[in-house]
Amino acid sequence: MTAKIRILLADDHPLFRDGLKALLGSVADAEVVGEAATGVQVVELVLELQPDVVVMDLHMPELNGIEATRKVVEASPHVGVLVLTMVEDDDAVFAAMRAGARGYLLKGSSQSEILSAIRAVSFGEAVFGPAIARRLIEYFSATTRGSLDAFPQLTQREREVLELIAQGESNTAIARSLTISQKTVRNHVSNIFNKLYVVDRAQAIVKAREAGIGVEGSRSG
Image (cartoon, rainbow, N blue to C red):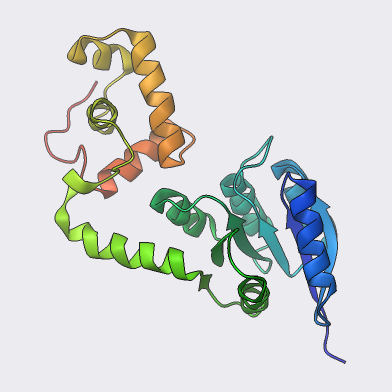
């Protein structure tokens, strides 16, 4: 008898978890061994249950899905994480990949796609739904266009703030340079962090410099 794939469901919507549980209960090779409604619960349950696969939403309380994925992979690298979410922008996909997720599907995926992805991730394969695969292709084909095309989700002002952050400038210096209040700078910085899926200034700088922003003309602040 083939061993069943042991699955932990991580989503803060009980109805969605119930739907997935019903789907997985209808196949012979899978079983749900636990459910988590917060990112912190995910990490705790992975350590306790050691599932084969975690089906992970990105938007969860206490700890978002990206950070939860990172902690899961660090603590239990043999556990495969499949992101299943409504979020489809490039930054979320790459943040999940950098955190160690093996797959990324949208919640609009068919039941057969979800089951196939769970099985593939349990075997150590990388899986991306058709919509995400297209976005990856578009992203990589666009990288040669340079930093002007980087981070299209940012407003012009946010891009100016990010440029100064990447050059190592403080909020005070940014406010002075752009002739805006420090409170406005803080608001822009918060928006940038949210849109780039980073948690602090250091991660924002790394992301910006990878995209060629702030590399030339860098100055100390």
